[in-house]
Length: 630
Image (cartoon, rainbow, N blue to C red):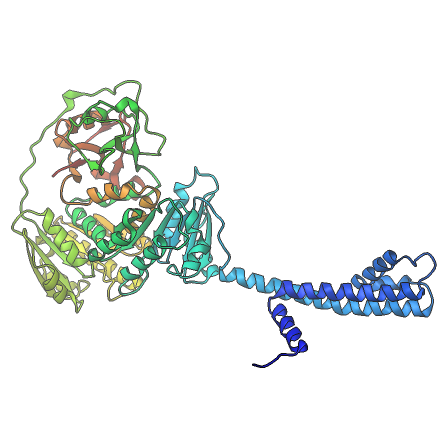
């Protein structure tokens, strides 16, 4: 074994110290300064060459220090040449030391700024929302959280993604704009790296949103992130509130096994497909969902009050002047929409309500006036077979067709037209167990006017235009959708035939451009998913409510003819509509006015959660938004 010399060991120790960075360099410069000042001061004091009155050792140390820091100080020195040369030596040493110190400080500051730019400093926050990953959903989530946090004190959203910190912050600033009182903090790192999770402060967070990465198969990455959080070696004792975005239904069980009760899964494919399946048959329904999912107007909340214990569910519907009851959350079970009207509320049970804010739900002092003379009960015709055509194809199409099969009457038809090379194979593989639908597929470009003319579009009840997101960029896919919409509207005008058109858009900005086509509904798929992720991140119990809303089993949201509830041409308040619905075991939650169906400034005629005393005169073609079984 080699024996190292003392010189080698000292040099090695010095090198290790210097490699520690700016602080070590400043420390060595300080030591060198002290040695030079003390050495020269000691010589001047010992030899006794200091001028009269300055021979005190402490004064000599102070004089030497001043000349080290400021070279101009020695200009006023007096004494013999030995003293002057000693002070000159201190000054020259100081010039080199201070110059080096300035260089070290400058380098250190630049290095620190570079480290901050890399986004590797630790986030020290409490009760904040953490977003892991990066996608277009980030902008909607941050925007919605900004609105939700307006009444909160010092709220924060922290984002961890494998992107440049400054680039993320600049992009959010451009696309989201003013975040008001919500601070947005970005850090660069991998969401599956345990050290990076410590940086973003997951252990002190209020909720964690896990976004699906923009890759061919994103679900394994999402599950790995959930695994990294829940199995972190330094995890906190209390449960996490994790909201994870998944694409494939087959991966939900794995995510639940990993996250257990700590994770709420938002199934992207299922959500969008169910919304399109419901919306294509009910014009305006997508606006209802938008109203309930965003934080800009009314949202869904849970409400409990000891005064409700012992009351029947149906008797609570008109108790709240400014809120609308839509469901029941038993203390020992999952939320349920439109339970039996004779359900008795117990201690700990909560009502599911639509309200402007979580503190606006209050029991009124007096019952609202109900005009029973305005009640109406027009018969609802039995469901008839429907013809639907789907123009375009993406990975959600098979799920959409299977969801549509659960809503339509037996003997209905769906026709698929697409240029996607994988469409036929996916169709034959994933759409084999249809009960009510007869399905057919053919190849063709929906933007080709000659093809559209040959399809007899006016012969269909519903037209669904899917985005070609699998084979095109978002902008190109939306442009293709817009061209097809213009052709469809021209066909409708040419034949004077009314058929519903539901279009899937990728970018919310393109919806405004496409409004000239007067399409019945737009489904901005990425925005819908982002809104739901945000809602569930604020309240995990909402995931069960939304699952019930979008499930074809049980009660869903319908837009029903107003004649089923109240008479047209007669002024009625909303309490009357609610009571009429209660007698039919249905929950009225709003209305849709036909004359405003294409007016964006009036929310396309959709109004959710009107005040109970608000009066409206309905006309033929208006609808009541209701939670019902069919």
